[in-house]
Length: 204
Image (cartoon, rainbow, N blue to C red; front, side, top):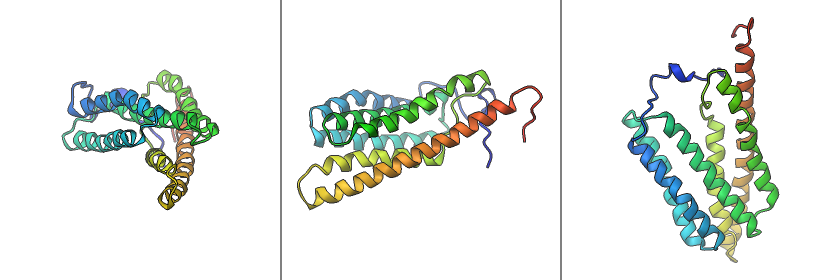
């Protein structure tokens, strides 16, 4: 499996444009994060779920537009995962604050992003930008984004709530596993990049 990440200077398919429709949509999704946070912390769960659904739909929509009309940009590659992580983090903290999920889940998921953030100086020093998003990372993010609405619904005292709670936790645990598996893949890529760029070491 190739672990090579394209250097910033050699990517011809990715533009440096800022004002593209996908970037505007991503920016709007980011602006909804504080709104979502207020709704979660004030226990306005129905409205929070609506915002989360809108955020998920626009996440898919701006990706389709970017690929269909060749508007993939460096800024977009930063905004999309940033928005996803913010929604996950805000959801986690809000639900933990309300005792819906334990705080250890917050630490496990947030810790993964802290670990990856520590690799950025290494990539920058070797002339690389953020590594391409791994499929496992995308799947993990997807699972986590859908786990939180189910866990919220699980608070409803009914059979539906019980089923939602079970599927919500299953989705959350799968998400955590995939999230960390992707992190290990990224760390292996960073280690290989660091070794290959050392003087006297040739790429395999």
